[in-house]
Amino acid sequence: MKAWLGQAWRGAALGLGLLAASTAASAGDFGDRVDHRLDRKGDRIEHRLDHKGDRIEGRFDRRAAHAATNGHDRRARRLEREGARIDARLDRRGTLADARWDRRGDRFDRRWDRYSDRRH
Image (cartoon, rainbow, N blue to C red; front, top):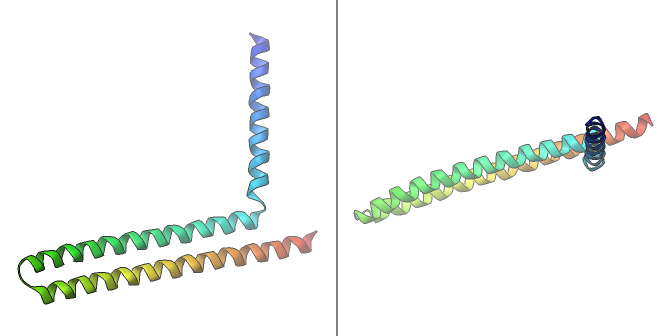
């Protein structure tokens, strides 16, 4: 029983060591990790705004379909245009926010690499 417990501890330690080594190797330095985190933040913002725009456009499309079935064609066209315009604006905001956070992450990574190169 005692030998089995020792082997289990060695196996767990070896597995944990390999996991830590592979994580450290894939993560790179601190600048890369911050860059990745900021990139993901930009992606999340873009996705949130895109989803919000799609929901709003869907709401306007439903209202336009209801107006069209009741014979209000001009109002239906206006509602569809307005929904598409709002969705496009939110998509554009999301794309710009994603690009902004990507640039911030890249800038941080470049500065961190420059700083770490000076220290060595």
